[in-house]
Length: 498
Ligand code: BES
Ligand code: MN
Ligand code: ZN
Image (cartoon, rainbow, N blue to C red; front, top):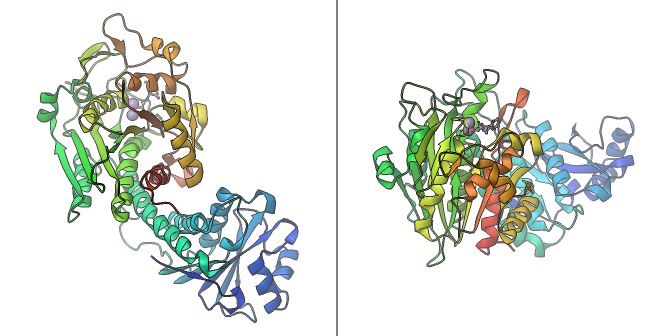
């Protein structure tokens, strides 16, 4: 996508489409006011007669507005002026773009960026514009035969700025937003692909393709015998029931000369049937999304590589399929993890932690600055937080605060849950060092405690994205989260934010 900034008046701007806003009780945004007076009161009239809603998330297209140069004016509801925050701004942009998504619009200029949105800078408003457009125009049609539904042929996005001095930062915001879109789209694609296509091998090939021709990014893929030699028996226990070969994908991006890398670990269960502890039938298809942690960290790598950020980033993806079978791991089986700790597998459906723990142990070889694992880990997290916040757990307040702040800034929020001995005790086992489940109470937290047992001495955090990684129902599909949150964190660490 091409982005530009403009200081011209909305009524003077030639474009296929212009976005302006209207607040509750019909208060017009600055640009809407300009168009209103140029057109002899067209906007005010249509707010009054109800053609235009002032609610956030609703928008109306006005064609052939007299006295203005643009072909279409989209009026987006902005709600209460005092409540216009970045989340509402994104929602308004998305609604506006959604209303013209079936048209032949090639160029859009967003004038909502002139409004006061909390304390958001021109940089963040430009970035939010780019990101919400990317999110709205995303389509997954790869698996459909025949004619694909039309998506608007958008080529150019203009960002209105109040003064020339804002141009540089707004352009940077748009460029960063565009790169976040690259990562989010990749994460959505990987998540939406079915389990018979997006296998561990497919994830590995995707990682290798990303690295092709990129001198800063290298990829290594470990096979099962290599993992066996490393002692990853916990990881390998999950793949025992399937014919699909497991992979450990190791991506290394070197954008800085010396700094210790951030390591992102993503759960890559390409289908989770539960194994011998088989899941019930309803909605089991959604367990193709059980690799959204992997998709999120590979997507984040795509964003970082696109921007060539001056930072070192490693991505680890333990990728497996969890199926029952004659050789599958059974409840009661005991395995030795790469760390040397033994695990009693009381439920083969608590498999995510079994692959992540060995990947976390593997991350130690990089002497990481921080390790963040990302996983669709527990149904309990969805019960605790719903689908709005990702669950965040860490023994490090500093790292947790950094991640939460990045999430707020990126409009991709996390919420911290506690960890600690009281919860960890629920994992006790009569036969091994500990068990892989800790009962129904605090299920997201005991899963976090399990992983924490492998993160001793690391600056580690765990993100449970079981609720946030995909939508169910009519909008069934991957969300691309937590790419925006992780991208923001890495942009900050790289010193790339204005
Ligand atoms: N992939 C699931 C978690 C999940 C379930 C995510 C539903 C989103 C929606 C995970 O592997 C799992 O099965 N977890 C079990 C753990 C339990 C056996 C302790 C769960 O949450 O039920
Ligand atoms: Mn499971
Ligand atoms: Zn799972």
